[in-house]
Amino acid sequence: MTEQITFTELLTSARKSDKGAAWSIPDHWMQGRTTYGGLSAALCYAAVENEITDLPPLRSAMVTFVGPAAGEVQSDVKVLRRGKSALFVEADLHSEKGLATRAQFVFGAARKSDFDFMECAAPDVPGPDASEDCFKGGRGPAFTANFDLRLAKGAMPMAGSEISEHYFWARHRDSEADGIAAILAAADMPPPAVMPMFKTFGPISSITWQLNFLTSTPVTRADWWLLQSKAENAVEGYSSQDMTIWNLDRTPIATCRQCVAIFV
Image (cartoon, rainbow, N blue to C red; front, side, top):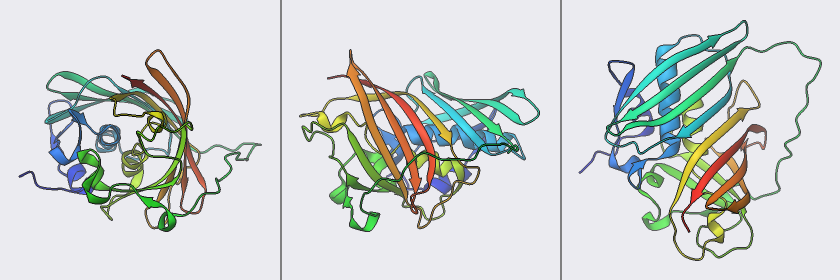
């Protein structure tokens, strides 16, 4: 039986490889035949942290899920450009079948500016203690056992809903999970916003995921993050969705975009 190692233990289990770091992905971090996408993104970020010291705050990330990642995965980190205030870094994650995930990160030091405003109003939804626990009784893909996920507003997948928007509270069960890598891993937890419209199960696959961080110090209390997803369309087998992340105090942390392939 595979040992149920935590997120923190998995990150710190990194071994040196020819080009970067290497990890063995346990079964309980899998989503079907591939590694859970949030973990793949987190490993790409962890690989950058392992290779580059004194990183400025993360401002933006673009993650492309190229192919399946399973078993042994290895990272390859490359600095694309280092400017006066911005650092552009690419991190690839390779599996036995080739390139699995490619992430590009933009780090940027703070600059003086005439502008300082925020227009990401916090939603009026219940807190995590008043929201529905989504995975009682072991429901959901294997990786979901590593998280608490609670539905604050909207519907679960295969509900036949007419609404393509939902809000979830998510946190790691691993109380030591911390930092940007932990946020990336938790932020991909909600199912695509189009899935509540499904009437029966159908496969989906994330293709791209972009995150723009709105603060240089993304933190929360009690480890909870509020995650909103809204599908803007579903056409010709693809869906585009808009996403926002708030902390427990309803302070906006990041805005996101995702392209999802749907096979129904």
